[in-house]
Length: 433
Image (tube, rainbow, N blue to C red; front, side, top):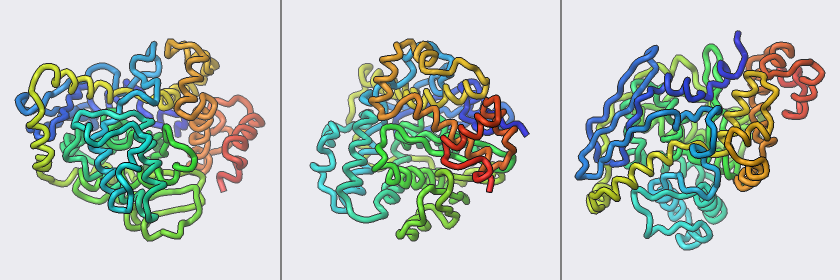
């Protein structure tokens, strides 16, 4: 069994992503677009989503070519990376509206919820973008100002309910669960519309796909709230788009919560606590299931009226194109994670901060400052990637120390044992047991 990162990790470098998900990607931001089609090729897994619409209704089809979505770690320069947490890249209209709807129903005050976020509801339009800082601040306000332990789960359901009136609506043309799962968890275009603060690290074995969440711009106090919301969002999105609920199992590092009924209601009954890492697991046999039949999205009357009221001119169409292109970028922390994954697999000695800074065409000091802005560091991100890899190798696959050390690019066993203990707090044998 090959235990190197691409086989287990499947984080999809740009070349692999484009092969797996289709190199022809054309998305539309208009909720009234029609003629959505899917093209399949390359081992039956490829999907090229194409959305066509009426320009008069602002259904501007925008083609995205190249590696913008996959973002090869070998790309030079930072033009395809979201280098600042203040850059506006998140499709804000649908997400902000969903968050506010849930918060207001649970005792939140709109003015207080928006305070300090730099977001103003009256200025939100269908092409509005918000930054990672703005969205993270909004979720923090919701967490602190609303009542009920199920708010995070309700938030996940509300975010998923927006898929028909967002760019996510083209995903109902995917052929099967695997294509849908790949787009939702690995494609940046759709990530900025649904789970902008969470990127899933994907691992594969012979019969399972394991998704480990990695968060950007989230404080430790907000982590559990955002974890619950992210899991609930993905579950609800798959159910809504596939028109069926597929069996998923979940692991949590925390102890069994008092509100276990909320977990079971929104996530299902396959729950494990006090685990080594947080994860979602899906059997590969399930992923080949076709999506259920569902009506083509038309959007709500309010959404369509809002779109039709917008001016149909070149300036607006240019904004639409910019909007899509921005969504294809990786956040800086996610770029670093992918860089570490690829570099670790090649067992290259040049995987440090200076080499990464050179790759991004910035100074080391600038890179450190930018990562600090996201509330993280190169070391923290690198250790996060290594920790997840070690946990999967030892606690899930139960491989030997020799095999795990080789897969992680560590030359000697004493150093491997020390590294695993430092990263996970447990010895390799304790993780296997």
